[in-house]
Length: 363
Image 1: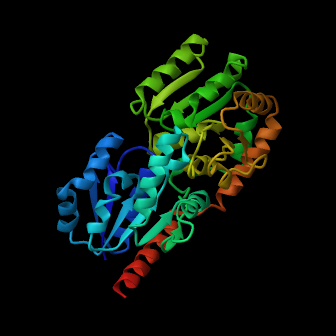
Image 2 (image 1 turned 90 degrees about the vertical axis):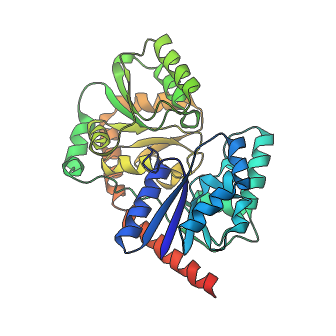
């Protein structure tokens, strides 16, 4: 098959969604398929809507001479009307649905209307979690197109940094000193870094050290707010920004820290929670979204209510003071990693599904 992948921006961007896209492209090419990545410029929402009037987008897709087109569904504002002009099967890869995030009512209504229109143009759907699939079924309760579930995988790292065992994670958890907290995520409002900062204000500064690994250029206003919170509460010595990191550098951070915290208001899956388990790190997420599909509450991590800084502070205090508990959670996290899907499994599911869609459309 000659397969297209339509995305916004650079496929090498640092985020879980782009990682998923890269892994899928690598797998398909490794298994003999030709893959053409077509990129639309990332722009503000209202400008994205005007892409539906651009014939050059259709020209790019037509020039690629594809058998089937995968669209990272983040592009849906640009193609929800354009898709009806495409003479080939189109499959949506759904990482995140805007209408289920926290937005003003009028925005949610608009997002939902566009998403429903977009989904109705597709020949098939790939959902990245049970949570996302349930939301898709809410949007199109009686007419959901053929679909498959392909969870993001956790085996993103290889090499010496990943060669750890239960003894290593236990000794790391029991090590004396400040609790070493890792945050992996771009610094944007949805990730709720301010909730962690509010929790840290309730704890002695000597009880923790925080490393934040993620982009700082996506929402400059929010980043400025976080820096002001850190500076205003005297936390500059305890909280460090590392910027966007990947590969062996990120693996090293997972290896060195004792827990991973990301109290997002919503995650459609949350690859970083799974990555943390590869290194035996208990993770703290929220009960909103799909974090509960990865984090076993009180088993190998903890789930708090969204925006509850008090609950987060209580957990951090408890884990810092009870290192035996932390060691048990760490061992459980490492053990749970073995139960999570691998990229070859998830991408193989998508590969077979694409073949089925092509056969179905061919009739």
